[in-house]
Image 1 (spheres, rainbow, N blue to C red):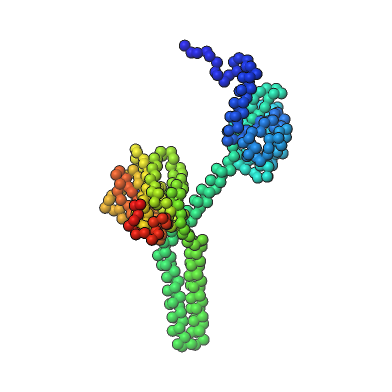
Image 2 (spheres, helix red, strand yellow):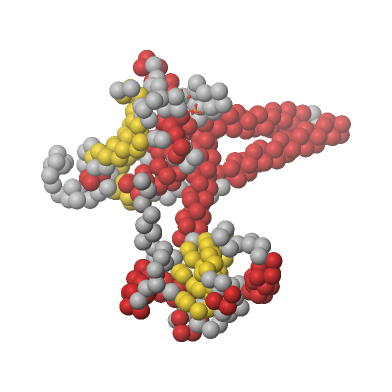
Length: 398
Ligand code: ADP
């Protein structure tokens, strides 16, 4: 039989003053520790409670805001309209935010407007009616989003720059045409000048006009090339390899979360710092991780493992292993050829770009079959200094 005992939190019996006080104490201590700010207002919008987290978040002491209208914490246009919002709700009972919550903005004491998630509850009746708001500061989340976007832009940029390697030959071909034409026109003009009648001189003028037009065209191609390269080559410096791996992982697996990929990192403390252009290495990792995720699309078990290893005084190795469909061992080298793809809408550029990048950074990249999948390995220059003092090169194991 079901117990009819009241829920421990329900006010089933009148409580003594001490019990109420103890309850309030407990509530206060809970409220003091929740990271969200809590603010209570009455029906006219006047603040009656302002938690410690709220003080921190908004920069006001509670004694400054108690008795003030909640508008104080809002930027325009909410600041101007909040009284109307409340009046409308009290008259019609139609909730636009109460019990629903929403993403909006708030205003700190120093005037800074920041993104928040706001949940509002309502309690009591009549004159004792109050509204409680829980405010979560989303500034950091917003910053993380912006940072991610910047990173993605940079990566897109690097991929353009790297695709340059593949484009170089076709551009050279394109430049060759106007240059050959110019050479032909100029030689023709020179020959024509052997017999400079007025008619011939007129023809020479026309031929030289053509040559000038072709050189303008060549100039346009070169300019197009420069625009394409944009900001020039990425700078190299000592970068934390684990940080690059974590960021690349987060980027590459955006949208792949629901695939349920098990990610396993084994990072060698001796392979902590590498001398690279950080975005380029991320570009390589993102490519490899995305390929791995795609290769595991139809696998039952989806395990991605990323390993780093100090190979020698000079080099570290990064290995990305998947449990995907694998690839025929006899054609492993073809994987890195430009435009080689087995995917319907694949460009076949990813791995060729990876190779261009890794080799430009002084490393090498290769693929091998792994137990039930593939491993892609690449090497990078180590920037860890602890072993590079005067000690012998073989003395690495510690
Ligand atoms: P794309 O992904 O556009 O096809 P890539 O150069 O990145 O271009 O990859 C080339 C080909 O290499 C892919 O089409 C695929 O056949 C193969 N490949 C790449 N990564 C893997 C992997 N992890 N497992 C199996 N095959 C792979």
